[in-house]
Length: 300
Ligand SMILES: CC(C)(COP(=O)(O)OP(=O)(O)OC[C@H]1O[C@@H](n2cnc3c(N)ncnc32)[C@H](O)[C@@H]1OP(=O)(O)O)[C@@H](O)C(=O)NCCC(=O)NCCS
Image 1 (tube, rainbow, N blue to C red):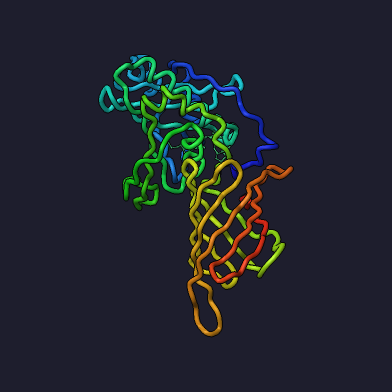
Image 2 (tube, rainbow, N blue to C red):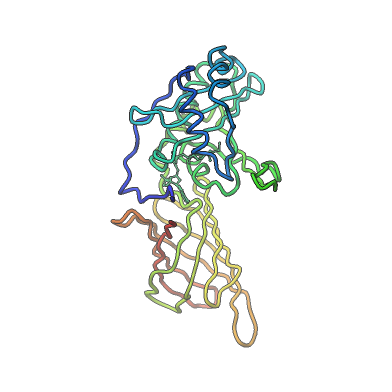
């Protein structure tokens, strides 16, 4: 089941964190099993061993801490925070399917930051990693003000034995002090979203057009192709609801292929069904221009 439900149909969950206690072991093991995917492997705990570890205080020490995530009054997941040294902490989050896509992930990140930066005066960096295809975690990091800082090649061993890359994110004490983790007015986030052509209002039609975005802060880039367009790349700044961008792509024609460059102004808006829509006005450097409407593709 896809966790990507239209925002109109999912309400934000009420979230708080509390310390894990031995009685939580059984549901934590369940959540771990439920939440483990090829993008975030499970911890494979055994309930009695975990209960004993919690009882001995092994998950409530200066080196490592385990939190229960309570969502709408029910156990919704857990978060682990491990201090590699007093200045740096790494965390991992697991949320049950039932609560995903309702803002729990980003709220947990915010509360972890509030707690750990307050309680650990030496702490400078709260960091985490996401498999490079783990769009929900990347979107949660973006929403909670974490910055993407690194790409670790072949750092994640997948269940099939192959290695994948991860992206490293962090929130620093300075970010936290400036309130970056709770800045809600960051506007639209196109990160990890794919758009398809819905309508060509003006200019040539690019049938089958597919546009895939990555975004960090206001900087957005996308790859696209379609009917006679290949290897399309665009890059721009999304300010408010307007993305101003430059593009380059290859046009395939009977008499050969040629590169084309140009610019565009794309307005982002949310439709009544919750999906994002982009009204894209583009012009190429040879004088061609057009307007098209793109619509967010939903999976599942
Ligand atoms: C990653 C995880 C912690 C995120 O938690 P969450 O509560 O779903 O996070 P949020 O609701 O705050 O944000 C997720 C966003 O990704 C979106 N999303 C979910 N699936 C998506 C998909 N396939 N494509 C694009 N976006 C997707 C959600 O709709 C939500 O979008 P929004 O920014 O428009 O609100 C949770 O999915 C999880 O536990 N996954 C399994 C374990 C894991 O991957 N842990 C991370 C490694 S530490």
